Length: 169
Image 1 (cartoon, rainbow, N blue to C red):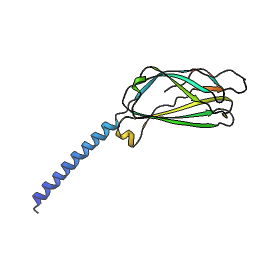
Image 2 (image 1 turned 90 degrees about the horizontal axis):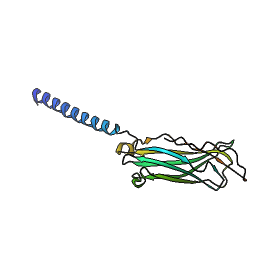
Image 3 (image 1 turned 180 degrees about the horizontal axis):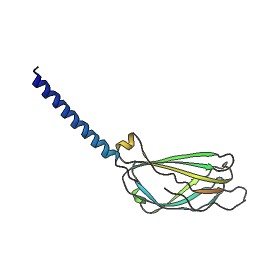
Image 4 (image 1 turned 180 degrees about the vertical axis):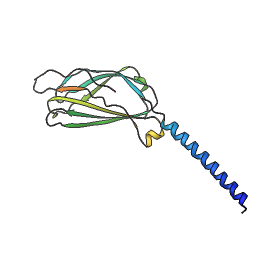
């Protein structure tokens, strides 16, 4: 092969390889840059700041959905007493947000186990979302945990309830 043809093929390989590399970088950057909150919690109200074991913790939320993303939420009840007991609750997963509930109040009921310890407790909600292929396969968007405090009352003894406010994402 002549030296001129060899130089020409080397330059062609570099040009094609460089162009493909730049196109791949642009595609991955565009996909990774699609980082926006797929929803916004407008308000959170704790309807039952005191709950008996075996009862239901009720809260109302108004959520505004903004994008067609897969949503995944893990829940856990956690006692703030000396034993610090944790109870994992069933996970919730949506392939698309519930658009029929967009901007409308949603009442969420969480059953408190009958053997849950009395005293202060929290419900920890850990949401995550995936809006594109990169977030579905590599890493998901994480939202801040929502942690509404409440009190588990036993034997008809009621004490001062935790504040009826909640920290929402």
